[in-house]
Image 1: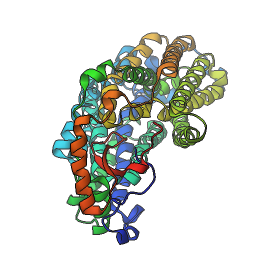
Image 2: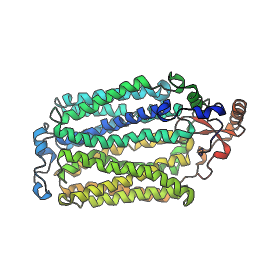
Image 3: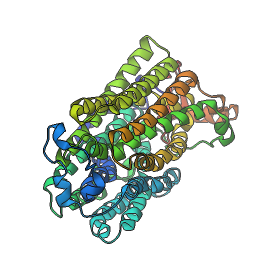
Image 4: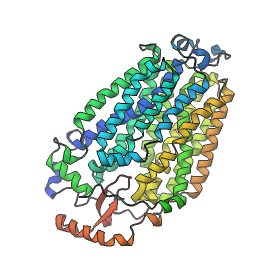
Length: 525
């Protein structure tokens, strides 16, 4: 948990600091831009089905034909689906297809980190996204044979996608110097939100105007574009600075000396203490509650826009993207505000509790309100959905970083555990939404939003009352490690002249060992 205070290890020699390339001239930032696009596709190829399925299924199975659309101020918004829909998939089949991705997504959450460490993040992420892209372009043809093939492809895509975060974390563990780690990683993962936004918009347009009955083009275009990115990934990316032939000596020294000589050091996880940790269970509860709401909206929002608000498919895609535009803004601004208030007004614990409780209660209230808005006030419904998902963005200053507070040495492992368990709502939530809305009425969808509201209320109470930020006893440096630290300190002094060097685990959860200035450690957490 080093502050912004510079360490003498940032560069190998004092006079090389001004020569270190930055932004487009640097290999680490080129990696960040390529990885940003990669994570754009990580989410794009996951959520394209949410829009495409609306125009894949015949109108009788995708819209509530008992509702008079003329009262909503639009023409027959189902005409596009009548012309393009090919499949007689009932609600149960549609819900199963939407949730099938998450059955696979459970599989490699924890092993993914081990694979990246053994074979390199470049290979693991590159191979996984190649599998996802191939499955995406195969989907239209196999869908016309049997829906079970779609189900199987989505499971395979989930398995492949589940290694993406561990693989990228492993790469940043070798590429990101401590002073830039937050910026590089956060920029990379912003690609997820952008992928969500662009995919919803483009999928709606392609459904209405694309080739192969519209919906088929959704998969061909997104999958084909991913192959272009994969070519850049294989050609331009290296697992570490030492393996990169284009990097300058100044940048290589800056990265390697900043990270330290042992970037792959790992600590033995005290599993028994983790299982008994109240702090861990609180974060898990918050993660589960947030994911129920998140996955309900990601998988079912376009369907709600169609069945209740009666937007045509092109409008549907654009309007389904609006909430995630709001989330991108609040997630970014919320982090800056949280850092500001925790430094000047509130303790870190109070900041985490306030931001997460606000996120849950604000999002839950807006979603419950959406359930009472019919198609005649559909603009209001879109605004409420945007505000709800905007509130969700505050979670990045709440439970999402809480494990870094109370167990910085094990944050990456702990996040993998909670993310593994919290994928279960991705399986269950779409199924529940389908079961609760057999007739596709507003009243039935109100029950879906009631369930989301109940989860957010429970999460707000649990996290708001019990979240902690003090480092857990089992997460502190054990006494037996003192000699090792002293030995490392002697080595650091010999190589750099630094007298205050100590070893610290990266507080972003990457498997790295950083040498930081004792005086630069934030003692507030």
